[in-house]
Length: 110
Length: 113
Image (cartoon, rainbow over all chains, first blue to last red; front, side, top):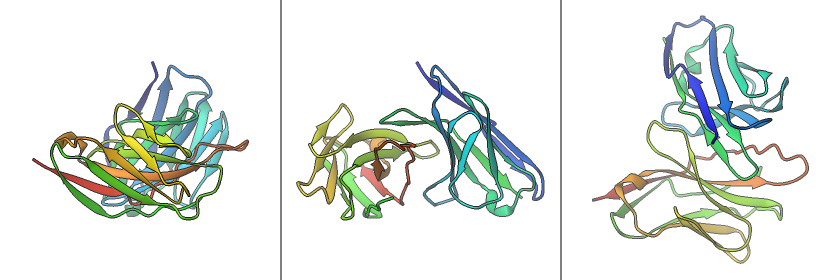
């Protein structure tokens, strides 16, 4: 069966510091991968998606970037965090009809 | 991406059926109707999807209007564990399918014991 991992589960970072969140998927090959963010009390916003290694599409302009160095690895990064980057970050992988979400990382930027 | 409109919140009593509406008047012929739900502090989980015909699975039923401009997610017997935000999403299928899901604000369902 397929599983999706995200780490860390929680993170507190100062403004201006770098960020790296990692997501890995097991049990499937060549999945579509997605990064979402949910700010406090808000809906989910799609940030990036990838249909293959090295292929990244950005949905909204922002302070973040994404990379897919391996088939089942998706990384979300920032060089300098802003207060507005706080939120719940979710990675997901997709089959034809369904997306499966990871446990999420709760990021607080102080 | 076509948009959907849902009520911000709904309440239900435990053990009673719940009908969650969704309007999607600009739906196109290649849009499937997907429903996801998000429990507190968790990622969303898939509930059900359909194109034209009504659909049933172990979690819920999906009733789709004949003109496809609206749909209703039906929970047959609400439990306290069904309290969540329910999202109705239109997803286009085609040769350039990326599988993207564009989430709206959803409906927050409260279930009273």
